[in-house]
Length: 315
Image 1 (cartoon, rainbow, N blue to C red):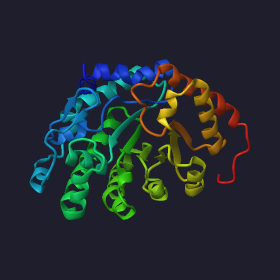
Image 2 (cartoon, rainbow, N blue to C red):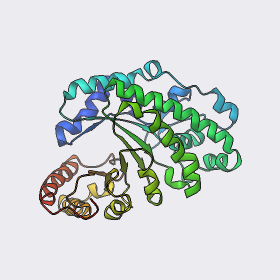
Image 3 (cartoon, helix red, strand yellow):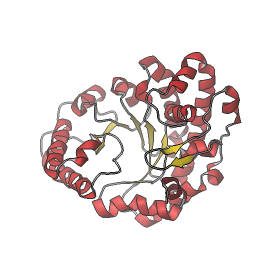
Image 4 (spheres, rainbow, N blue to C red):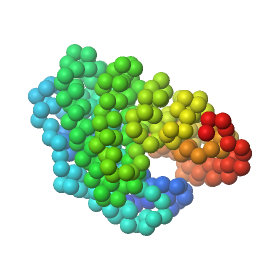
């Protein structure tokens, strides 16, 4: 059974979502899905390539006419399998931990839709940015409106926290990031304000825009492993929570090495509230389960000791 079949089968997606809660005793569940299901609902063909190919679009967008053919879908019909999985997961969790729903940020989705897959430089996406910025804005606006509807439906189906993943925001220069990424992240957050649910924004390799992300309206900012956690907290103060940011590759190391890395990261932040421990990106498929369990245990052990320290000055 391939990855997309798991995503599209609610009963199976529920099982995969709840496994980390049951086996690792993590403090939240994040729905098993993929950010590319939304572009599929908008009208793009999404396929799964065996091996390391992963999900991709065999017919990427290349023109204004391609963009105009996309729809702003009704999530209750085109993404009903995601909403069903959320409802079923919420019932199965029965209040044990909060349930996180998520979507890709508009720039990241646009980059995949224009390339067809992940690439080293996203040249088609950046070429449109520089040569036909109006076309790109039309696409980003359509994605933003679709994402806001999708996430609203996700909250109504049971998601208690929302996360936006801007995996490729870091490939943009500062001005381009503001115009083609952050602008649309803010648009989505503003569209969801009345729902009163926490929103976390993750943007990989965008530490230079940390203050801007903290002022986006989000309640939390996810950090990749390249960002110094203590320095990030000093930059943004206590205005938003910070999530992260252990290097996912550390979970391939020995448990004692994982323990030291977790302790160091927690000490960098200190005892004050406002930190959600997490990896600095998604967990790698070949991560040993026992190493993930060692990481969770290290967080619990060292957090208990650090909370007894005096709170730092930035609070």
